[in-house]
Length: 396
Length: 54
View: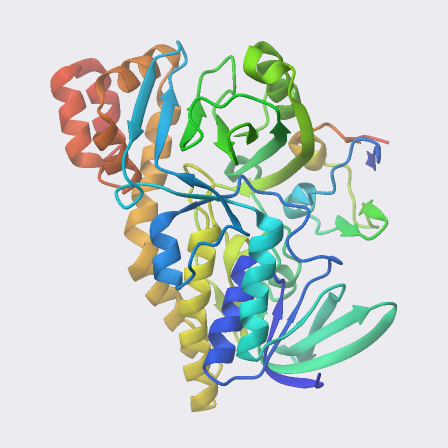
C-alpha cells in the first residue's frame, strides 16, 4: 500500500471494482476502498444480469456466482393475463447472480490485475488543494490517513457521499427514486426456473412492478420496486406473498432493501480530477432499475478516459468530460427511449395495461426493452387506436 | 427524525435522498447528523417504515 496512487476509487461494488480492474490492466496504480467489512453483502439488488453483458465485460459465467440460467420471461398483467417468452439462451436471457460471490469475483479480478482493494476502509472526505480534488481522507479500524491521487472516482452507490463532496448534484430527487424491498425465499414454487416473472397492477404494486427471479428450482428473489405510495412497499410485498399459495409457506432467507434511481443519469459525470460511475452516477435503467451491466461497462469507458488524461498530464474537467461524451454515445439514445417508455407505461391504468399486454407479442416486448418504441407504437395504434394514441403521444 | 433499529435494514436508501446531506450509515446504524431539519423525505421513502419524526 502506498500513500499516493494514480486513481483512488471509493466503493468496491461491481462498478468500482470493474473500473479498478480496467485501470490496473492499463498499468495505472489503483486504490479501491469499501466501507463495509465485506464486499458484496448485504445485497440491495434483484441479482439479474443479461447475457450480452458477460460477453462485453469478458466475464465467463461460473456456477459460483451465476446461480440460475434464465432463458425467458413471463409478464403478468393486472387482470392476470400472461405473456410468456422462452428461447435458447443466446436469443434472450442471462443469469441470476449470487452478488456475494459475484462482487468478490470482480474485486479478485481487479486485485490480480494489480489494484489495491481494501475492505472495512471508509472515505471520510476529499483531500483538496485549494478547490481542486487531490485525493481522499480515509479511516480504517479507527486510524485516519490520507491518500493522494491524480483522479478520485466515486463508485459508492445511490447514497454516494463522495459525489456530493465533489460538487456533483447526485442527491436523489424524491420523484426520481423508488423504494425496493425483497425477500430471498426458499421452498417456494416458481412458474419456470428459467423464466423471470414480472407482475403489475395498481392493487399489487402501484406505479412499479414486482419480480420473481428464480435462483434455483425452489429458491427465488421475490421483490418489488415502487415510488412511495399509500402503504409501505414491505406491506405490498407481504400481502402478495401471503396471497400466493406457492409462496405463502415458503421460508425467508434474506430481507433486502434499497433505493433505485430511475430519473436517468447525471448530466455530467466529472469535475476537475474527479469522476463518478455506477449507481453514484445514476447509471441505471429507468424502467426496470437494473444497473450492474451499465455500471461495469461505464467503468471501462471511465478507465479509458482517465488513463489517457493521466498520460497527458491533464485531468481537468475539460479533458475528463470525454467520458460524458463517450457514455452518451454508448447509452444515451437507448436509455432516453427507455425513460420515454416508462413515462408511457405510467400513464396507463390497469385496464389499459391489460389491453397492452394482451395485444403485443413477446418479440415486441424485446423490441421495447431495446428502446425500439416507434414500430411497436404503430402496431398498437393499428390494433387498438385509443390505446395506441396514448402510446404514440408519449413518443413526441 | 429517528430510526427504529429493529426495523431498519441498513440499505442506505434514505441516505441517498437527504437534501441536507445530513444522513449517513455508520457502523452503529443510521445517523441523522446535526443538519437534519425534519423535512421527512427519508420517512416517506423508507421501504419498511423504520423512520419517524422525533
